Length: 489
Image (cartoon, rainbow, N blue to C red):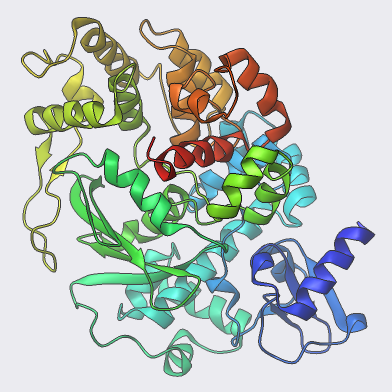
């Protein structure tokens, strides 16, 4: 603990951006908590308390700094600490699990007692589940106040406050000012923003290799569903029975991406923004990951050229499973072609959305839509078509669930029990849909090819070597895949 405190102390004094969001600084003399990169004069060490999360600083009685804006920091990694239960719990809270439910209900979904869940959160985050949920809502509302034109009543609703009065009281208690007063002193809103859209800045942990992430999506973009043009990613989604479009691109400020939402209802903003953070892996603890992976001489070599790697997530676990099945033993390009044909035949077209022209207009078909699909005349072999229908049936029947409360190992076991799905497919789904940072498809031909050896290594040999990459084997896989692209392989 003392060694960790010394590391944080040096990072605080150096305003090291790599530690932004990994800890917070409570200043005893002012009662304010800050990010380690706060531009204010650094307080003396004896006047500082270190907190592992914004929620723990808030529970200790500190209020957020209006200068460095803790709500704009990268989020807590979903795998914070060593507890799988905490990781799953954070994903559920980010999706609003405690907005209208209790800690007891959350604990039930995670298969533990509420007392044990509180103990785990206290150990790894220094705060209770309710405090984490409260801080997330507060920070999200503050971002909307500062960065959007939404009315304050809509901000209150979007952030999950039950009433405007509660919203106002919370802000006065936390910031000593009303939301209206905070908006008056907040950042100037970009006047070029379209009135029918909502754009927010999302901070990420640096470094961030956006081009590598975009290239990964580019070669896998399903026609009609996803579009990549220049440095911009667009995607059609169904949220609360409505067809919407999301857009992600680099912001003009270093350390941020700009997320623009078209057609997203106010009530779905919080969950959509949190989901985007996960899909684009904004909160990956890059410093921790690189410190482990660079111990391998080959990965160290690739890391030097490819820092800030991310594991691309998925908007739908079912969709990624379908894509993985289509990709079995064929090229990425061929699998993408097949996915495009399936979407063209079985996907749902969304209507025009105000504020965006010529964007993606098709939704990936649901499991219910594909459970009886024939898949004829699209180039899909019968065995693959049968596997797709079996997976769709398992999802429709509730036997297969990709929810954030599900243990990745349990989901992988269920996937492999379905005829036509093996270890490679299950691990690929765990990596992208279940956000397991240690998932690793060892039999992947690209990974085997990327290991520079006189004789091609076997999956068993690769697994043995990958033991030293834990718990970040998914990131090692992305680094190896990218090395093939860099070399033209």
